[in-house]
Amino acid sequence: SSERTYTKPWYVSTSGSVVETDTIQAAIDGCPLHGTVHIPWTGTTYTVSATIHIWKPITLEGEYTGYYPRENIAYNSTSSAASSYSSATYKIPYGSYNSSTIGSNKPLIYSTNATYGIYVHCYGVTLRNISMYCGSQTSENAACLYMKNDFGYDASQVAQPFMHNTIVENCAFQGRESYSKGVWCEGFGVATFKNVFVYYVKYAFYFDSNSTAQCTSITMIGCWAWNFSSIGYTFTNCDYCTLISCSADSVNSSVSYGYYFTNCHGCSAVSCGCEQITTAVVYDNCNNCSFGGMIYLLNDSNACAVRFFTASKVELRDLYVLVEGTSSYSYVIAPSGTKILLNNTNISSITGATITNGGMHDYVSL
Image 1 (cartoon, rainbow, N blue to C red):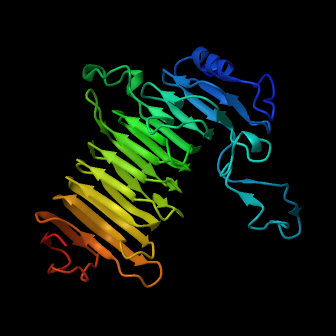
Image 2 (spheres, rainbow, N blue to C red):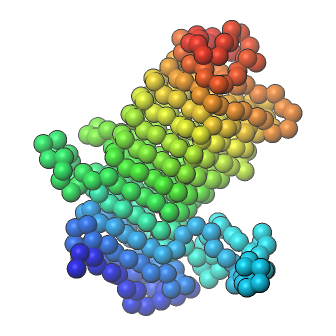
């Protein structure tokens, strides 16, 4: 068979005393190329104490992620509805999850002591329906999901297995709010993230190039960075990446930025949202990038919709901005030399700039 199914041999105790790293890793190691390792949900979390390594193009598939009922919900056959449904019945899978509450709020995998929860070493990997909590990470160099191509790239063999698109879909990751990264792609390209939820981390989604490889061709669809302590989406030295209907939300008033682009080219955000954050979007030395969607700023006099730290060339398209409460705020703060193309975006309230939609404008420091 082209697929290998992983059948759970025992339950993980609610105390987290049973460690299943070797069992899951053995299934991955034994799975043939392009096969599937399936992790069923049996009602009890899989506890692992070391990094799960994926070093060949396979699919790691779980059965448990997203929202789930905290208690059983009665089904009313007459109205075809959950008769006992209430807002309190549903709960984020493991928003306050830790080892002491493992019995009530359960992710599929609980990583107890690893720098990386899952380490993807090559292209062509698919992660699907995985929820993971990494509770012991105390460094911003740690991540729930770490992706780095350790096998190199041979341009003469673009059809090689390692060059297939990498896909992460219907997954949820939680780390330590003041420390770690949720998803970290280092020098990794040609990847698609769909319906990926990251929360309680310092950096939710983090993409950067390194000395040997470019982070490029990243596509994000319907992803959500929630309640992070620093930045929702970080793109550094990235080219032609696209975000569609993604969101960056937080209830933490100390959050700095929703989206942060540095030295990027040809990166576009389409119909993206940003709520309850002081500074929504930052561009630093970027060219031919664009942002559109809705920004809902905190009721803070320091609030800013789009900020440029160095001169950049950016398009603001179909962008709608509103502020919580009645506080004043800045639509755009930009240094001299910045070029902004406006399309269906009104920033006429900016001091010291003559604004006309549909044209290129130089901005001066505010």
